[in-house]
Length: 253
Ligand code: 13P
Figure 1 (tube, protein in one colour):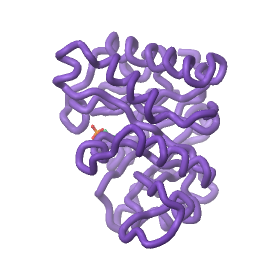
Figure 2 (cartoon, protein in one colour; figure 1 turned 120 degrees about the horizontal axis):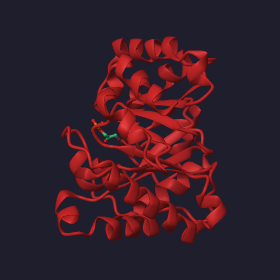
Figure 3 (cartoon, protein in one colour; figure 1 turned 60 degrees about the horizontal axis):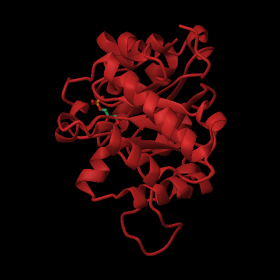
Figure 4 (cartoon, helix red, strand yellow; figure 1 turned 30 degrees about the vertical axis):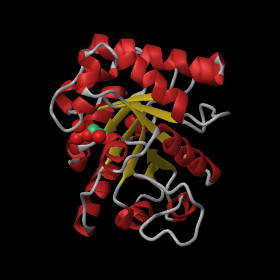
């Protein structure tokens, strides 16, 4: 498949990983051979406790790191929060914002996600803005409408292809082993590109990377990654095994 956009495969480790798991990052780096490096960008988003050490371990490998969330605030009395500048200072290039686990478990609205995306951009991080419908919403035929609304509410104004990544992650596909059909992914990604065109202008939208996430595994990666307008993956569980993460990356090459 000829791609006009260089794909990105990002691993979201979620709340997994102690220092011993730095070995996974090292193994990914070892397997990131020149032929893959020429074609696919990689990023690892470890828990905040490992971000600095992961970034340090990956210096010189061209594998980026990212945070999994950031505060809308820059600094101050916000116990437990982490600012975008802190993520950048720990070596991150990306920040995942609006992941469904944050939207659901922490009540993050589109407006909050937008503020987080803007805070990331201010710290020169590229936000990976997550969107996706629930099972009920898909079954009710509302998936496209829901995702369009999430985009309108959470994409920062004035974003460019260099300052924004979108991840479509159907909530019902996350950690369940279920995936949408390639046709459903194609329809959704095309709709996302079109909505971004309205928000940011067609030429900007044409270059924004649209990742698919939700139960991506080596066994289904080729099918999902070859869908039009799929420019990479946001990988949860499978990113905790270097071999699987690299196999998914290879499916994008
Ligand atoms: P899984 O790959 O484990 O389904 O998780 C997807 C995800 O939520 C990535 O952000």
